[in-house]
Image (cartoon, rainbow, N blue to C red):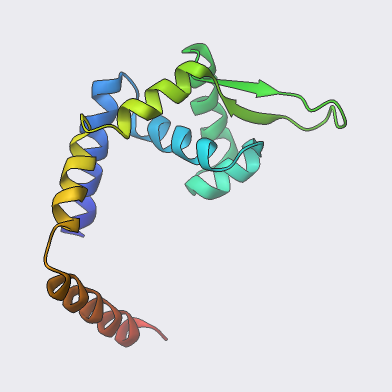
Length: 131
């Protein structure tokens, strides 16, 4: 839980530097990795309700970071796309300026033996906690 809290603090720190919320940053990331994603699919991937994600998307549209697109073949469906500003914002997050990316790089620089040991312990704990 402490690792999760530390990770979330880093996401919050980076999101605030970009002028957005952590949930908005996570939404940009999911949209980028899932072209033509629908609101319902995005809500599922973020593990949030459709109404919550709808509000997040409204604010991202208002800030010019995403757009809603109606595909020509199906006017009932709306897909969400990053705008060029949204792509720039995400690129800033992925840059060396990101505190999260700096810290993740530090973790990746741990000796391979240490990482293997950590993963092995993780699997042991997971196995014992699984029904």
